[in-house]
Each structure stands twice: as C-alpha cells, then as structure tokens.
Amino acid sequence: MMKFKRLLSLCLCLMLVLTGCKNTVVDDKKPSCNYYTNLFIQNMNTNKIKSISVYETNYSKDKVLNTELYYIIKNLFDSLKKENFLDEPMYTPENPVYRYYITFSNDKTFVIDVYNENYLTLYPWDGKYQKDFIDISNAPKSYNLHGLSKYLFPRL
Image (cartoon, rainbow, N blue to C red; front, side, top):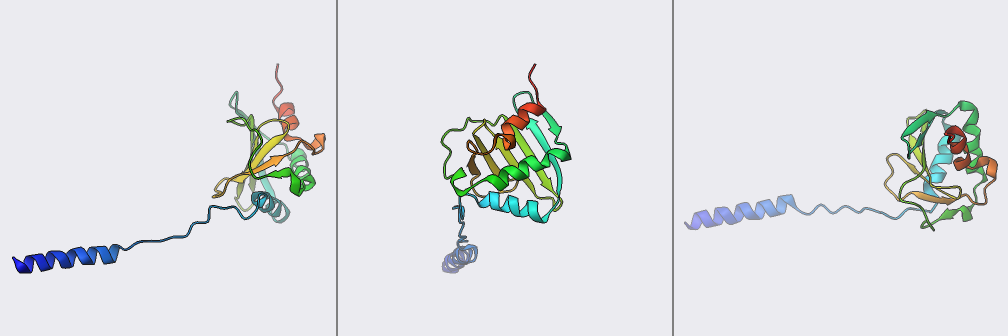
C-alpha cells in the first residue's frame, strides 16, 4: 500500500511539473492609433492592388471597383493627417453601410468599413489589434468613400 501511495504521488508530481504553466505575453495595445493605416499605405506603395470589391450591407449587393477609381482610395489616405485618427470612435452605428475589401498582389487583404460621410474604419483581414477609427469629415469631398459608394449603388 505504501508503494502505491508513493507511485501515485510521484505520478501526480510528474504530471504537474511536466504540464507546467505556459505563460505567453500578449500585447493587446496597438502601437499607434494609425497603425493599420500605415501598414495599408506601405502595402499600397510596395504592392499592386489586385482587386477592390465593395459590399453594400443593407441589400447584400457587391460590385468590383473599376481600376480607374482606385486613385480615390489612394488619394483619400494620402490626404489624412494625424488628427484624423481617433482612439475611440465618437459615434459609429453598429453595422457599416458599405464595406471595401482591398486585396494586394501579396495576398494581404484590408477591410474599410464606411459608416457614414464622416467615419470609417480600416483593418487587415487577419488583424489582431483594434481597428483604426478615422474621421474623414475634413477630407476633400471628392475622396469621400461614402459618396463613391452611393455612386456605385444608386437608390431608385
């Protein structure tokens, strides 16, 4: 009986020691409030855009953006300044009205959620941090993605 207790306690100790505690350090804090935007701009400058598709969430319609209109997205992000980026959104509805899927030649995909004329978010498809919240109310109207989306999906 004594040998059985020793064997049982030895097995329990080995199980505890061998399983151990896997301690991983996860940094959930984004390096900056425009972190994903910087990655997006870097991808635009180094890789070719493979496709941009626009999804209209209310009626579940989607369209592929014509390559001649890619410059609008590039110019919008080139016109942004540090004050356009928000730590937390002032106001965004629960669901975006339009969603842009931008795929680059290196197969990286970024998503732009357009909430209204003033607010959008940007994040990579496989991102681990919180989205970039962007206020585009002072961006040129010709670069406004909400206006472009309304042009692509006209209402009758």
